[in-house]
Length: 362
Image (cartoon, rainbow, N blue to C red; front, side, top):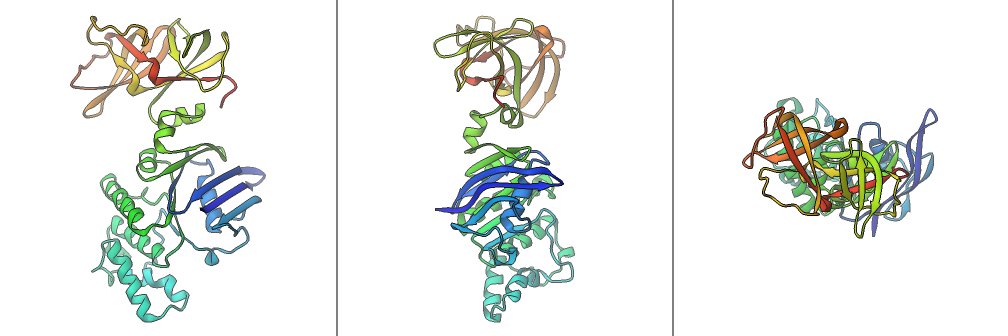
């Protein structure tokens, strides 16, 4: 059963589409991520689910009921904001209890539900404190407690961890994963942080310019990007423009400027001389450390110059220049070998990790 359905929804601001004919189905109990760069429409879409914005076209359905014209306080949803949005003059207990008091909930039930919510977010002894007496992570926990105390069917998260420092943010990601397991409600989270969205979400929608580019599991989106935008936006990618020069049994041969040839697969039929973009991850590039290694016909071997090395702990990222002033990014673990700036190296890209996008694809 769909918990949330977005049906052909569009939203315009000053005649410009912020959300452009988007359709999505989010299942009950799913943790769903909305991922994309700033201005792609993901927060506007979340606000339409919450009721803070109304669609100009299309409909928003919650549990198969059209709620497009229903005000926010009458929808079975709650929202956690990036800025916490706590009442500074109210105690932690009263911040969490605020929504229950608005609905005239009995005092005994308010006490039980607020205590239960604070227990869930691991702040059982801080009910008497004011928000200014809490750390950022603790304030975000209070915001979560306030959002779940009303037992919404859908919890909306708008960049909920972006104001936290990296260590606390990582801890709160683990807490969100725990909330997902314990609460059994539907979560929809907006994020521009790929690792965060991938770590928490069952499925992710990648958005660009108001449209949905791809919906899928984090694994599918990372390993099988459907459009050039997704391939470029997700992870560390190499995108090289060239021309298809041959079609072989299970792949195409693409020549890029300078004459380097790559072997790539495509989800659509292609023809020789067609313009295409070769795509592969930086982690797919192998810097050959032993000339005796034989890669046969499993992929492309080419020479390159090391322009820059970026140390990243266990690994290093190399920026390589190949023939025709093309550039390739390679990531290698440091225990294998390191390469100095200016060094000439040979590199290998396997067929298995390489795809292509033809000119008429996004």
